[in-house]
Image (cartoon, rainbow, N blue to C red; front, side):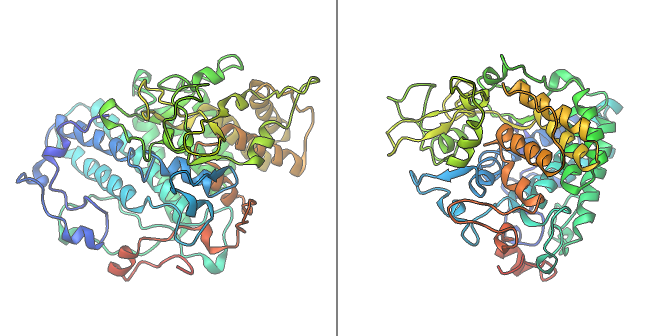
Amino acid sequence: MKIYMFKRVLATSVLTFGLFACSSLIDVKPRTAIDSSTALVSVDAINAAVNAVYDALQSTDLYGRDLIAIPEVLSDNGRATNNSSRLVSEYQNQPGFHMINWTQDYYGINLANLVLDALPKVTMTDAQRNSYMGQCLFLRALMYLDLMKSYAYMPTAIIPEYNRGGVPVSVSGVLTLPQVEFPGRPTIDVVYTQILADLTVAIAKLSATAKSRGPIYATQGGAQALYSRAALYAGKYQEAADFATSALASGIGTFQSKATYVAGWRTAINPESMFEVNFQTSENIGVNTSLQTTFTTLVTLGNTATTGGFGDVVPTAALLADLESEKDATGAVLDIRRQLYELGTKGRGAQNIETTKFLGKNGTINLDNVPVIRISEMYLNRAEANYNLGKVADALKDLNTIRTRSGLPEKASLTGSTLLDEIIKQRRLELAFEGHRFWDLKRLGRDVVKTTNLPFTDYRVLARIPISEINNNRNLKQNYNY
């Protein structure tokens, strides 16, 4: 989506490169003569600023690539091909090669905070104010959750001797240097409490938001879905189940049938999306780092004669084996999700099986909307939450909803660790190459098993906080061993 006038009316924010006291923040200079302290004084300016928060998610450091691709290559789902030398170090889990979303997420958080601070002062209808507030709180919660996934342990699996807490939290916007704070790291639980509090208010404020605007905007159903995810990560299983149920009933996103599921990945907006990052033609990331070029060499389905992208990250043999693990009497693979993987071209080197979940669905090569939350995740969230609550029948029902939609037979009876393992397996297959696998292994305290294993007890499970942040904020503790 476009930033419209926002870059002109709020371009003097000193927070262009970060929320807290990093060197780039101190050095940044105004890009126009307009005083940003007087910029957010009209509905048009507020609307432009809210669009800018959405636009922040398009960064390659966030949903433009890294938050989708890197969790696959850090885990056992993705293998780096070395076709362009990109993401090879991440695949090898080398120290310091991890997520780098700190700066861009805090930039987006500060934009959201500036809007939230300005809302009470701008004349508008209550409906407008509620909508803008709900959207900004949803986006702030999403960005804080993404920071926590990268730089902190999850409440369900912690190495106490390595734990340095959560990430710094600020709920007020910063425009001038005297406002810059030097916060430390609160506890993990404090940050999750803030995330869930933001989503609680967002759900209430977005109650009147038109469903027709979704899923490229925050909606009540999208906020309920994000709450379910955050609660699952936090080990709040009853809340994870309850909010998954609310999200499924919200009318945002349509659960696909076996007959329509694959086709849904060929449309500009995935019909299962409850929230996705929208890209317009002018916002094309391009051939070097887009999701299409990262995941496939193909330009169009089935055409191995024309090379487009680099295919830097392809599915591992283990992932493909799981996709092909159930077959009919003739030996044919039952799982329809296997149809989202096909042979790439020879244009970048050896041919590999590649994912086609991102293939220029907006009608232009390297231009894809990015699903952040899909309705299928809600069934899997609820299945896992109910398993942890001891509600085996309910967990099995949701598991079978995903299995039968995917072309697999129902499981008549599973219990104990066998049931959990099947839920996690279906989560792996359903959400592969959508940026979930590393976080799922991390929150379960499981090792990454691949060519070079990464034990959960290894410090490299956490990302390194930018050194500039540590150098400029003596209250900020670096993650262990960095």
